[in-house]
Image 1 (cartoon, rainbow, N blue to C red):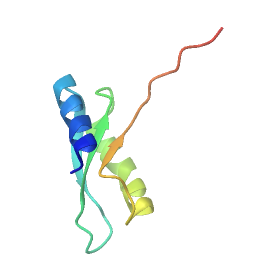
Image 2: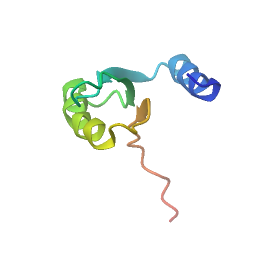
Image 3: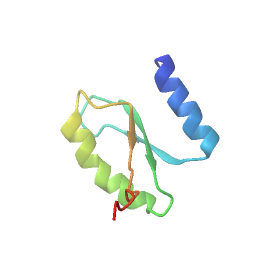
Image 4: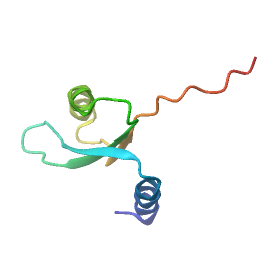
Length: 76
């Protein structure tokens, strides 16, 4: 793991971010991924939704995914 990736993981861990581990569903891949998500999401829904992303991104998917559902500040 690169130092910048390790730092990101350490920061997320220190923040107590909600995460789950998933394995790429592509046959014979077996790569494990960490997915950080908002605690308001249901873990089963996140897992179902991310199977598509992991398959789509194979073999170039990142090791960490982040679901950011925050709403940017309204400029008005």
